[in-house]
Image (tube, rainbow, N blue to C red; front, side, top):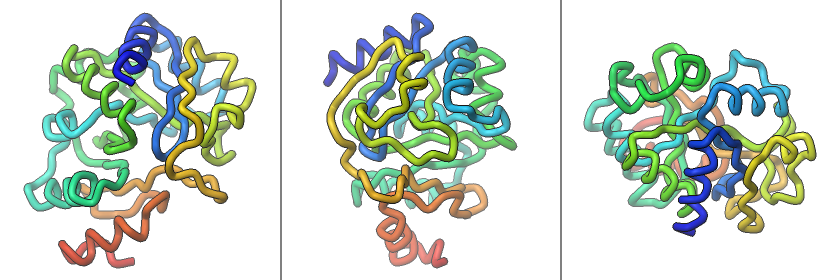
Amino acid sequence: MAADAQHVFEVVRDGGVALIPLDVAYALVAVTPQAVQRIYAAKGRDFSKPMGIVGGLAAHDALHQLDDVRRAMIRAVTVAHDLPLSVVAPYRPDHKYLCRLDAFVLRQSTLDGTVNLLLNAGALRARLAELCWEHGEPMVGTSANVSMAGSRYAVRDVDRGILEICDLVVDYGVSKYHNMTGLSSTIVDFGSMRVVRRGVCFERIRAVLHEEFAAITD
């Protein structure tokens, strides 16, 4: 796994697109403007819809601007209860980590002063996030499916047009949280405490936030 993460890091850093397994679904990662544009074209994705930045708890702690209570909520879900969660929150635009991104790529991975970091989505993704942080070289990611077509939980189910743009494919079989409805990660905006998307493990996540913090009850 560590070797796979290193290979992904190097391919993406050199301008490639990689298809990688996440617990929630397969995903595409890239960093150069050309690679990001290839992803948008292959997915048929509107440029008004942002990608997320590849990051773990270290990036979350440094980039997101949240109070201690909301940080505790996020750790309760992702660490104590070991659930995947996409965290949207206001970010520090002047942080040196983000300054390494091309202006176009940064614009495509932020929205209205917020940035989305997917946390606890599997060992490979976690190690890749660590490599990005250790080297100060961020990358961005999005689900490996045609826009609005539902998540893909195995390489065999990824559309041919998306596979054709990939310089590297990492196949770990079926994603941990595969489901019949095409759901990916649950997304919560912790700035406004609003559920952006009800995805995998939503009911469990909601229960943690409600029972331990009296937050997000609907």
